[in-house]
Length: 210
Ligand code: BEZ
Image (cartoon, rainbow, N blue to C red; front, side, top):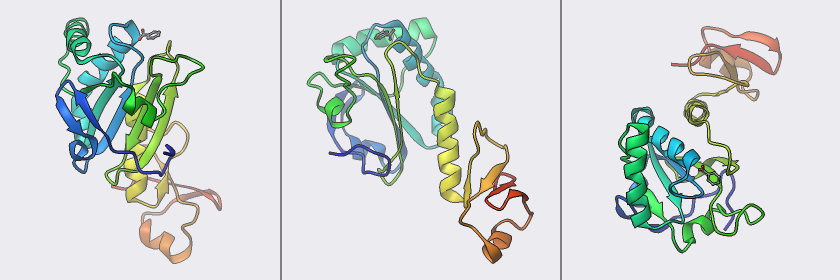
């Protein structure tokens, strides 16, 4: 099955720390953040899962449901969660998939054999409410992810899907955006009555739509 931007995220059933789930039913029309980590009881992964736990309210505000995955067992996950909660001073309230038979990892191409035959790399998938994949990121084993960047992209995705705008390099919430290059003439005036700054006929800045 092809895993690429715009394709339908494949559904699966899995055992997780919050019980068995059907992925689509669990998403329940929300946005999804599905991310894999190489191994339980490892330092970088501990900081990553601790941080996702701490960002709970940021995800809730954006209607995002987070779910982690590794090929370790449920027992291993339950033991490690205690460490994460202690060391990162948080509560892990999102599910972690125990993908011991690597079914979901293979479905989503999370095992990169030139790196490891046995462990998932640090994959990130943002899935829209229509179940289509909106973002794919792959980080190496030794480098922890930047979840501020992941939230920044979610903000940009949610904004650009609602309005005829795109976001410039390094864009952050509340900064100016760019009017979609294909928007022209009367439509432009109607959608952006407060005006815009034209740098070239395809680079037109405007304030962030409400
Ligand atoms: C870690 O999470 O610390 C880690 C996992 C696999 C390889 C290297 C580091």
